[in-house]
Length: 247
Image (cartoon, rainbow, N blue to C red; front, side):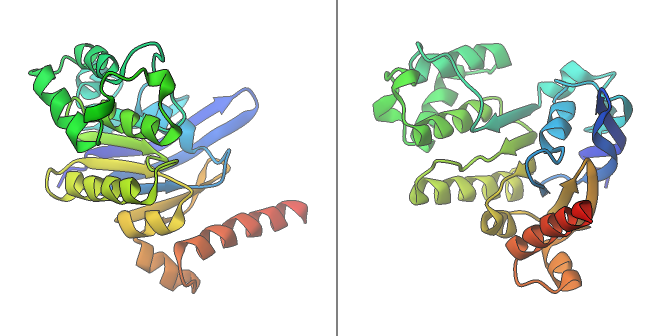
């Protein structure tokens, strides 16, 4: 089966700093792929290249079997991105923000889709509330609702459950599983919540200094390195690299 995302020798430099250094990976349809690493490892740069925000200095990106460089607009119509660190117009209400982005995304039957998402994310009573008056958890839910407006086939999620209370976070994880397993949505997932990553992701990749240290199924990585869980593995890689840098 042809992968939904195929990346070959992807490289991005900022002056003398190589943020992403020749990485390659494939992601299959309906797969949840965890992109892990400490701050500054190259995760955000990789995602920004997949979204076309940054242009690679070298390498190739293919999405839906097509060159991203040649079919950028077509690919982005079927892609979306959510992060707890983005911002929306604060002087618009929840519903007005969703209407704005529905128009930008060219969503058909936008009113019905917005009603569906307001219900799904428990926003029916806050639909007329100003976005600037929302709590951090409510903002995270709104970012997710915005992200799903165009029913993307490729979804890039950066810390999607940050600031959510346990019940809403659990509902969000259930939604992510359903999108992948029932609707075939391909998901790139970044988070520092290692138990969450371990429970959700089919495969994970550890990125450090722009290179992959390891990539594979979680259980195989744990077996290979003799750790009880993904958090132990994450800490092991980070501390090992810190030690080697000191030495």
